[in-house]
Image (cartoon, rainbow, N blue to C red; front, side, top):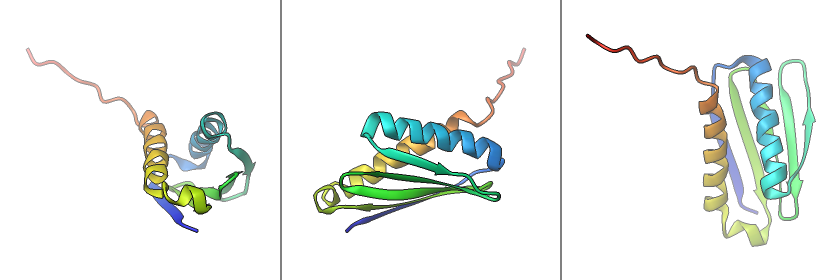
Length: 107
């Protein structure tokens, strides 16, 4: 089975990272018909996800996200496309948490 491994550093802290992970899980359930379960821990959380042909987990830590997924035979042929889509979705959610940069005009 092909594996997908994605690591993303962040500086959100656990509370804000949980919100990002919840949004990611909601999107995965809607867009990809995933079944997601969130297991909250004291120092980190785990989002377990599965559907026919794929299962994995997203570790939610105060300073990083770690996603590991196993793809079944049929989805394995699309592993690079699936990995790219997951990266795009996670990066978009992380970008939304960044503070807006104020532009100042020079006179």
